[in-house]
Structure formats: C-alpha cells, structure tokens
Length: 249
Ligand SMILES: C[S@@+](CC[C@H](N)C(=O)[O-])C[C@H]1O[C@@H](n2cnc3c(N)ncnc32)[C@H](O)[C@@H]1O
Image (cartoon, rainbow, N blue to C red; front, side):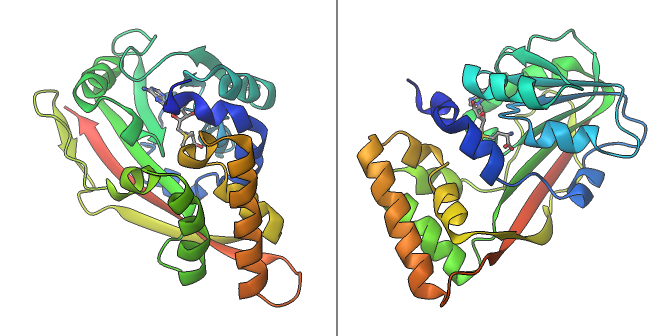
C-alpha cells in the first residue's frame, strides 16, 4: 500500500480523533456566496462536514478522495456531500465547475505542478483555492513532546511536516496569492489522554509501521501524558488551523 493510502487503515480513529477546522478558519477560504465547493483529499470528511454545517452552506459540496476506506467513512457520515473517488492530479470534475476548492492537511501529498493545473481547470475565473492545515499546536511543549514520540518511531514523517506553509504555486495558472502571511486560528478541545495518544497514531508515518510498533507508540505516548499530567482527567488540547488562499484570475 502506498503511504498516501495508509490513512484508510484507521479511518474510524482518524475521523473521531483528528481535528475538524475551526469554523472561523473557513471564513478565510470560502468566498461569500460560494455555491459549488470541492473538498480535495477530503479524507473522512472533517472539512466537508464543516462546510456543510455553515449557516449559508454551499448548494453543491463534492468530496474527492483516493483512499477507499476514507471515502467509505465519508460517504457514511456525510450525507449532504457527493463523494467521489479521485486524486488532485486528475480531478474527476468538469472544467470551470467550482467557486472554491479546499484541501486540508493534504498539499504535501500532491504533485504541485500537476495538481495546480488541475485545480485551475476546475475553478471558474475568480474562484478560490484554500489550503488549510489543522493540528494540535506544535508550539506547545507537551504537544511537541507527544507528537515527537510518533515522529521518532516513524522515520521521515517529520520531514513531511517541516515542508510547512510557505507554498508558492507554480506560475502560469493565474493564481493570485491573497494570504501570503498564513492566518492561524487557535482553539482547544477536551480529550481523554488515551484519545490523545491514539491521535498520535493517526499520522501516516506511524500508520505504515507494523501493528506491534504502532501499539508501542500508543503506549509510549500514553506513558508520556501520564507522566506529564498528574491524575487521570481529560486534557484541554490546544489546536490550530492554518490557512492560505489564492484567487484564480
Ligand atoms: C492527512 S489526510 C487529510 C484528510 C482531510 N482533508 C482532513 O483534513 O482530515 C490526507 C488525505 O490526502 C489523501 N491523498 C493522498 N494523496 C492524494 C492525492 N494525490 N490526491 C488527493 N488526495 C490525496 C489521503 O488519502 C488522505 O485522506
């Protein structure tokens, strides 16, 4: 199985534990009056559902996702969306069909020149590309500590996250950078320490490890949390959603 498809092996845990974007973050990437929106690399539909939950939800929301088990979970939990199998490099949608394309925690999986051309093709002139990343806030010491356990076990995943938000889209497709300074929205969510430890195991670098090694990451993460926080109460986990936006001329 390619690394990009490993998420499907724990689609239920992914959907339950990974963060949906802050509602306020979507304000920065969804143009007012957007009627036709695609969630590219939609995973289990965390962003798709957040888009559908907006007060003025778009009339058409298409979720495009290549991992069959992620797409199945999305289809089961996101009845308002059209769930479509596909990749960013060959988007199975008509040219000029969309007011906005969103992609969350996914740009690093794409082939940027090919995906950019495809996104430009499916957007109407004036349409918006919004990139988002939602994650536990790595600037908080204990979050970095517990995520570091997964990264240390998963050779290479740190490299992926280091690629960061300084994205320059390939030229020639008419994209105008509207938010060169990424906008960050922060919030917190109460989680059990076991769920935090299991969330660490929903990253691709851990997911591609043998099951026994994934269990070891979970145990080590749980021990780290128990050692860091006295008692056994829930943790108030700090999260962030980082946003970039381009308009297609
Ligand atoms: C970290 S998950 C993000 C899922 C969802 N957007 C979210 O925010 O929870 C990355 C997703 O990208 C998908 N993916 C990987 N390569 C892709 C590609 N070339 N085109 C579209 N999706 C891809 C994976 O299957 C996975 O569901």
